[in-house]
Length: 449
Image (spheres, rainbow, N blue to C red):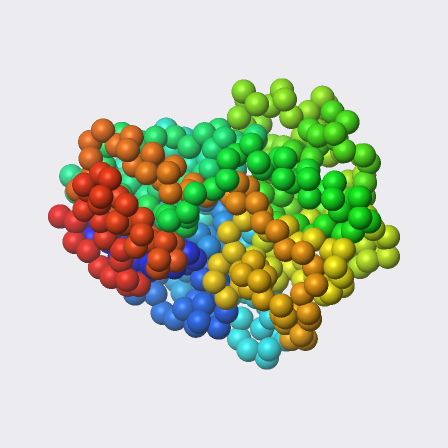
């Protein structure tokens, strides 16, 4: 068995792992690189394999940095099947539809060739095959099994057995306890592990702070007649925030206030969530709502069209606007930032990971001036962050997940983390567990036989 690291190597985005066995060639994930011109160049570069020679793809979950190059794979000749969980199929289609629209809009604006087009998306949509957790399948001599990662709805870890070896791909591991999702499952044995390290050198705030700090930010904005902007990922983060606010509003912990879910993708994703209640954390469901709708409360308005989005500007504060994208590298949040960032009564609440070179990272690091749509703006708004809302495990939880391998792996490959995070986590694993680690470079190849 051989593995080549075709993305997320000493960086957070672009997850893509090429695996070769004696009987098959396949990928685990095929994600988009994100974060500026360098990322664009990586997306456009040739794969270190022939797409047409791939037998299949295993997809850990729907997020763009794991699924975003699937249409490109089709464009370059892939015609095999894509195996993932049933919720991930529905969510991936929503994400890729949004992605292809943004890519083509940018290509037209910049007068460049788009990375892929709608025909490539249509081609890939017919390739998905749904799988359940803990239901092994075998394709071309490769046995694989999905386990709940607890990261987003339908997210999975993948245990693969081939050529006499067992290798586990963590995907993105969740940050339990989460109101909506079941906790991350543990796997007990593997010869090799490929695991994420997004927060490999950080510790999140206590999970109890998620709701209290969110409600505090809303309350402060209401009291000062301000605008609260929440740049949020359309899948999982948006739904979690809605359920947390719904719970508090129903219990009388907040007055009625205008809140706008200004993200067509988040609205579509919420409808997908409603289709899969069996994937929820059943133990916590009864605490979240008095009615049958986890995601709605008085004052919440859904904005589908750009005209509806523009009208939000005419609504006098206080108001809360939840819009994509979470890293602020695109989407409707940019328009709201443009209108509100120079107002000291505005609060920008960051509730997820923001990659290097993104607008979100610059704001989080305290830049006093930023460019939005090419125009400079002074940052007078208050910028806050709630790390406990992250859907990624922090260092203690990553180590806890590894510690549950009763049959200790021969080697851990540390991926999906910025350089310092990955290297620091690598050292933590070696010092606390005595397991050999590797932090691969992009396109590094390893023979696991």
